[in-house]
Image 1: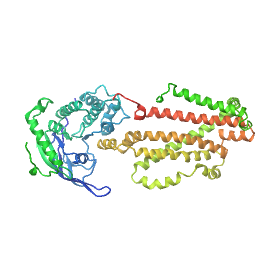
Image 2: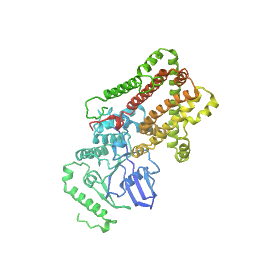
Image 3: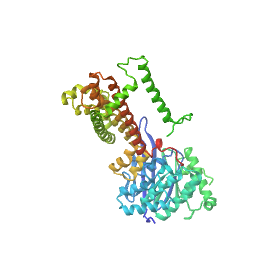
Length: 274
Length: 263
């Protein structure tokens, strides 16, 4: 089994992001502050164009914030930090088509300096964990979309990160595969104890997966509410989704996102029926 | 790949038929007196001259010299063009710094350098090599530059987030991404290098098929001139086929080559 690595806590302090390209400057993120505890699974939702991807790229150290800071396990993020893995929506482009599945999963480990025998073990276990133990010698493009995204997840898992960032990872896979992958992420998260930040536009998915759901406003983005999801540790696609508490939470988040779309900028101004 | 033509005749058969028609015309036009037979002998005479030359050691020596110049020039152009391309493409600011110089030097015809190289090296292989390298390096350089710039931003984000070193990134992400461009550059460069090899031999008289051609003209052996032209054409064809094969082998993963898959 892949070792239980200890998650790191993540803290975001007054992060602001202004894009200054051609023409006028665009303020994507106005002011975001929040904390994610070590080993927590937090989902981030918001209307489309809410700067979710911008936020994730800042957390990943791929994009510098205009002001404010992100700290991971007490260290300020200034570039992609060690101990962080990212799973992106576009699996077809984040996996390297010129390498076999095995090599794709192994490459980050090699770069990290993991010894050969250990690499072999980690790759094998990670592929087993996503039920792709037999696909190691295939090329990514020989697999279905859902399988490719599982390879990307295996690559992240084998890396033994403390924090796993996922940017709408299941937006491009079909609905059935999506449910399977959601359960896979929950299972891996519980087994590994890693901190997970999961960005999605799917409200049901966010409520189903998360321990907490962060609801973002329209751009320039602020945090509207941190919704606690008290659905217990065991989640089940049928049981959980038909539970009254799930429906209540889902409706609450849905209403918030709908009003955020129309320009809601403070939870005090929200007109909520749930 | 098979062509998607609606006819049932396979592509290679059509290709052969085309060649046959061409040869037939070459045979008929001079024999029928449509064109002057002295300067344009029929195909049978060209092949006759060719077959008698195929047993002459002189011919094989010349062919070897031509191939040596060509391959050496191509190799130099390829390595230098690739290294320069990667450096210019990867080091920030280098593109802007070099763009105008490259655009100035690139259109200078290699042949314009003939007087200069003759002055420097005389009628030696080096002279022709310089022409070959100068002409073909641009094909490689510009394609490598385009290729280095074509790295998918998602692939690049992935490499950065897993903290790949610059060297790993170049080796495992940049180069494979650039490969389709590099291959096109190599194939173009191979043809250009062959053309300039023969040009150099013809104009400067460095040893090879080109200088045999000059000798043939000087001694009035017109069928031989055509035989050598046929050899040059065959070389060009072979070069193209070889590089297409290399392309298919190295880019098996590329959507243009891997064809349809189940996914």
